[in-house]
Image 1: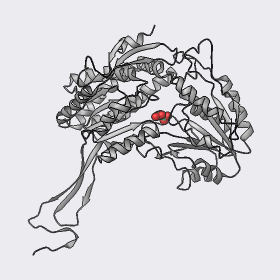
Image 2 (image 1 turned 90 degrees about the horizontal axis):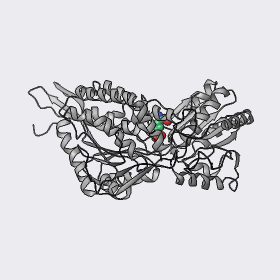
Image 3 (image 1 turned 180 degrees about the vertical axis):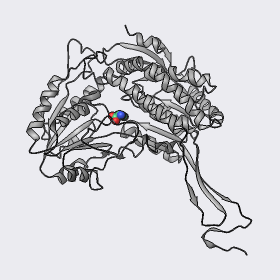
Image 4 (image 1 turned 90 degrees about the vertical axis):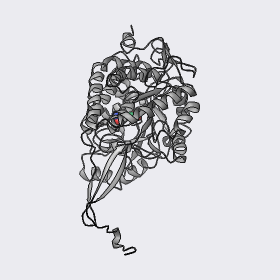
Length: 508
Ligand code: UN1
């Protein structure tokens, strides 16, 4: 029935280590991947032990020497083939994402589309890794900057976007001339193995088998070796604040580079003149989509008092229509959470709502019985909250939406900015002054700020990331590629004199 597993080369037992080739018997123990959709074992993965990690790191270092000599537009041609292969495997890979992680299949396929989009972007980029030229203050001197490959990029990804976020990093790293080592979430190892089964035949065909490497392993042990490894000049990590801080500390100690994309606590502000039809649709997608497990998920909604009752009412009606169940069934709107621990975390948060002065007005329960045997299903939940509800400070990775009433836009913006995270934000308004205020330096303090669209579902063309505890990194589009390269400033003297800068005369 799950024929997409065969198509993607997933066996009952798989190696979780690719070091230019699949390592047959890695020594780090066995991981069982269980689907949150039906609670069944999907397959087993053998994880990396220390000597397997060493092979992976060596494979990436060795391939770098050759890969960086390949001209960037040629590297882009390889990426074009990868984009084509991803188009071919969009449906089965989308289904695997859905089955292993729990998001609905339309979102699983959307994630693969995001991989295709960034690959297409990277193909164009491979001819546009531009440096600047400057006018030198010295006569007959030329000054310019150029961008060189950086080396091996370490990519740590989270379960919630098990394939797209790797592609954001990997496609840019490939055209930048870097090699890479990927450590996927232990909750979604099969997605990573399937991706490698798709991309590596292409890399191998061109003689570049060691450019993209992979190891599945436990963060606490082998992950520590990875982030401390000086052979990896950049660690790009997506996940929790706790994980990101650890990565920042360890990599910072060796003065390596990090690119961190950590938690969000994203809010939407709705003014009294907003188009409420758009608001309801955007909030539904933002708060219920991916069962509230995107880092861009809408977690806080600030409603002007004039529209508060109407919006809450309409949202309650919309929530009641949400079909919760089998993520692979195309009629389903919300699948399960990633595992039972996530359900426990959601329930623990909801238990505190009333003691902190909030009220659950919709949903709030776990789902049991037929179709929900995995124990990972919950109702999407709306909580009416005072603006200073302590729970709202934390990112609970679940479909809980906190709704707050406001009178004055400045209050709404300052409450909106009063959390530690700073990823995505939005305002719904038809008033130009409100929109511009929200986008101004006195407005949203997030890396992403939208008008009349929700907080989630960003396109790859923009730089993606956020401020404060979100980590400050920028991935995907715009000039995010610069993080994956090293800049060199070059000055060339084509005269027969040796003038010094700043007009200094020295020993003349
Ligand atoms: C994430 O949740 O880590 O903007 C990434 C979005 C998606 C990416 C989310 N394009 O919601």
